[in-house]
Image 1: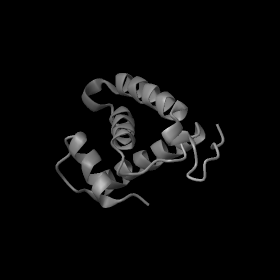
Image 2: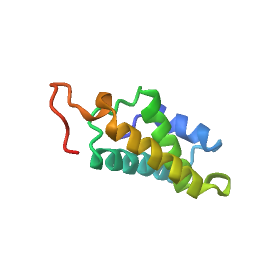
Image 3: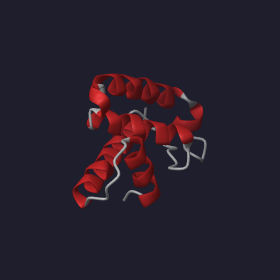
Image 4: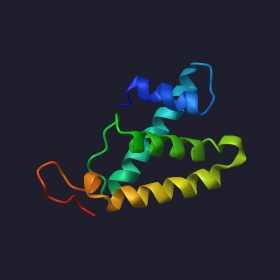
Length: 102
């Protein structure tokens, strides 16, 4: 489930003013898909309060929504950030000190 504060941040980043349930569902689906993609590359410490994780959600959503017709650029930026997060020990190591499945 997606925290409503995260949804609101992404809605603002996408410059969407309304609260249409359909749009909210799409935004939440985008955030969940981003989470899954980060998990697939071994990001095990993805706190919704972390600025880089929020940036990843934002880039992913902007790519999904083809924000300003620059979806491919946002997808490339997300992929770069995803790679950096996957390699960063702060994100790819479980709290007990063992590495996630990379």
